[in-house]
Amino acid sequence: MLLLDRAAVQHCVGKLDPIAIIEEALVYHAKGLTDIPDEGYLAWKNTEGAYCRSLAMLGSLSGKMPPVYGLKVINAALSNPKHGIPRAGGVSFLFDSETARPNLIADAAYLSALRTAAYTIVSLRFLGPESFEAISIIGCGVLAKAHLELVAKYFPQVRTFHLYDLNQEVALVLADWWLQQVPSNCVQIHTEPRAAIEASPVLITVTTSSVPYIPVSWLPSGSFVAHVSLDDLQPDAFMTAEAIFVDDIDLVRDNPRRILGRLIQDGEIVPPDGPVNGRPRIVGTLGEVIAGTAKAVRPGQGHIVSNPFGMSILDIVLLDAVHSVAKQLGIGDTLNLVRED
Image (cartoon, rainbow, N blue to C red):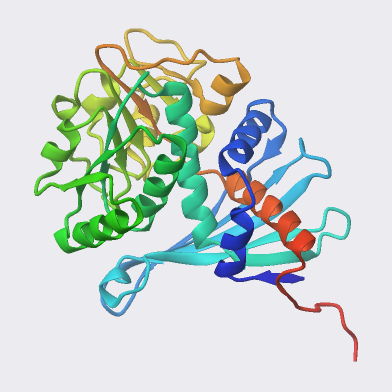
């Protein structure tokens, strides 16, 4: 089994186009060429009383040749940041398609943040405003950093970033880091989330909020919302959206920990194949938009919501590409799981 630490993973990613990889995987998913079993979920509180959880996410892509099988285990503790530790971390595995044995283990946190940000970039390419030069980010942790890096690469016209975090020191650290990377950019830190949200036509939420706090009245006309985290938008922001898109309707609908899942379960919002009867309906998945089987809708006078669940197959397809590069470059360490003494 090949072992890749974060530095090795990052080196391999530098040789790849993550956006193209994610788009291809989304099309495979739209065509039914993937499998995403129910995730394993374990929650507890540590000695500080902080929420902790472990997610085990299996997935496969039968559309690729050879097919790809894998697992991501990503754990998090809300108390980690105050100790100088990233909130989330874990490992991912790939499995040999013939023997079923694990043949790769790698750092999961970096790829997890990358695939999350890459999904946002793809959604912006197909569903975002026709033009925009500023972006608002609520939550200034690891995911915000990943989004900044990809926005700069794929939307170089964006020169202004509006940031907000409950912990202003975290926002200041992110702003300082980003201005060191791109001194020509403008970064404005806001003391209230509403001011940050109203400042641009693109909103990205990457928080740990479990209480919705963003009403539709805060969203500018003609805006796009990447609702990446669990519970930022209030129900009226979904109910009045010009269009709602997800990555997988079943994953979103079946998860009551997310506000959109609760709204679907309560019958307030209708899945793509459901009767409307005056209720808002989810248009479809981003993969269906890319594949041409669902209509792309960009913001008009109102707002568009992209609400991904976060699919294991995106981590796994990125990891498969990293594995290929690692083998080509001959990097990584090897662990022999079948040696007999």
